[in-house]
Image (tube, rainbow, N blue to C red; front, side, top):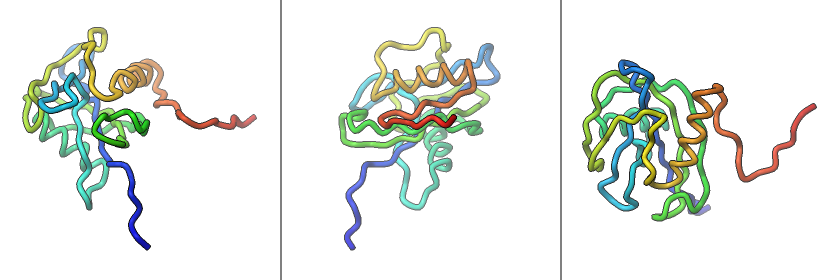
Length: 152
């Protein structure tokens, strides 16, 4: 049987800096299209676990060693990435230190969750909305695109 054609697989990580007041987060400014600010992340390598890819991408893009604390959700809208259908697992992580832009990050910056940039790449406005809800309530991203049958 031939291998199926499937979406690309990626991971993104919202990194909370726990040695700064109010746990700000790190965003990168993309050096390549689509431009804008983005959550650090990238494609998963063949033979790599999602969690390993998240840790690797954080180290490559912002030079931070992270501790994953939660899976926020999966984002799979076929239109979320203008380069093609990409599915991403978004994690929440903690880190110490000062991020540095590296790899394909043109720039990186520390943002208060009360002052996030307007120009965000991909569907990261939705992801960050879900993250703010997670931060306030502890609830992960809701399921989207399907009807969910509620149990009584």
